[in-house]
Length: 359
Image (cartoon, rainbow, N blue to C red):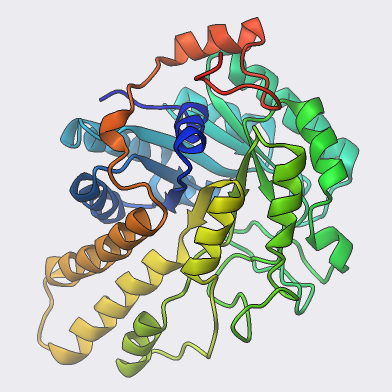
């Protein structure tokens, strides 16, 4: 099956009221684990590569790996997404290497550390959307800074995250600004700030409304019912994997992620894309530690990697089932990017008023 754009996939999800987990990858093992789970569940997939992943594996290796996964799992619609692009060049080179979707995160300036003002964010995001839509690629923007409502701080992910502390207003997306931002930029999806953050240490306690502002989703969706909302920093940091990690020499301090039931609630409110990275890292690292401790004579990397792949796949399957993604892959017929470009140029895909079904 051909690659799919984020816009087509999220339109399908909106029409059928489900969410799509977006998993970050850096290597073959992660890619295989995610696609094996998707095949078992008949689920479409969003594979994300950050700037850090592109630096780690290299663009050629990543692009060839995506080609291999596409060939190995031909029945699975596959969206390949640039996560947290920091400038126009990052986004355009991703498209040149076969990505079907890019995120321009103008909430921070190009250094990926300094909070940007609205004018900068809207201007650079609109330019990326203009260029990407010319070739049919999708664009995700971000409004508001991803960070903790408990501390005002944000965790850096692959070098992306603000420094210092911000006030609560900067850590929550304003619905009025969101409506204006989508109108000015024409993004296909909007990542919003509601108290989630990158990494494992999201909350010091089980999150409630004062530190995880799910009501922001509802208010933005009411203003922008046809714009796809994205939850970043939405790993659940499963307690059982924390326990395995710590039982075998790890020292992860007590932490709480975003509960799956809260994400499901968000999907009912209009969330269509859910970013997940830490969960897979944690499960893989826990299995590495378990093998190292229980089989101290083992030195074959495959004996470490295969259990880690199984652990990652188990999380992926659980998320596909919980988010309603399971069973959807076979219902999607990918639209070529050239055809998507024509629809953008005709104005048929204004993110405020149309989905593919209506275009």
